[in-house]
Image 1 (cartoon, rainbow, N blue to C red):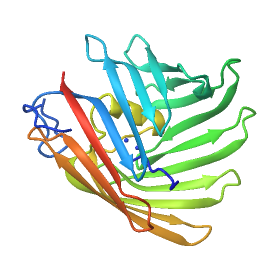
Image 2 (cartoon, rainbow, N blue to C red; image 1 turned 180 degrees about the vertical axis):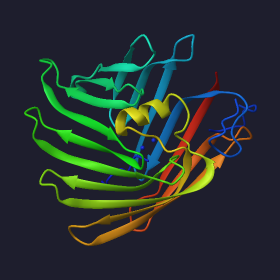
Image 3 (tube, one colour; image 1 turned 135 degrees about the vertical axis):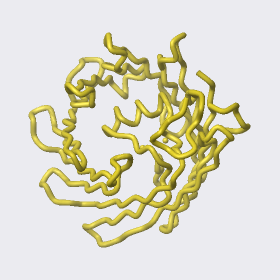
Length: 255
């Protein structure tokens, strides 16, 4: 089976959805992402979200090739997710810590049933980007990703990945459209930040990946389809290295 590529992951037009000055042609009302579905070759998977009366995500339900589980979120008094519990013991559970500015500062991954820590990630931010550094339970380096923002700080321009020895193994460069990213909508915006510390605001046009150890590279070209409100309802990724096309659909609900 070819390797799945999850794209930091809607049929029918919705009514115009609170103006967002960060993205061109932003919606006038606020919408939530109810479900995203993906097909790549013979593989298919989806993630569906449930919400409380205030529009906060309560659960994330994954099914298909990506894995089957229900993630239940616990929040602090500020409404931030501080713990994610899975109904499938294979996934353990995660806890999240934040800095004074509200940015994700640390993610801890624990195994079940014993609750032993498996790995943790420290996020550190600068004016031009940030780093996500992964450690083993003893504090040894597992690897890190270094991100550089675009000049407007709305998106990631470059991602550099390093192994446990500190050697750079990969570099990704990104270009963007002037439209809203399919993932820049709650609760996927929050989930993207919990997974990688940041969520780009604009839709990705291309991703070029260079594998430094073997000298190979390939490009991923993405296209998005939008409803009248300016939210993405579809996207597609095409690869130059022979990987199967990745097709995505997004279902929205008005908050």
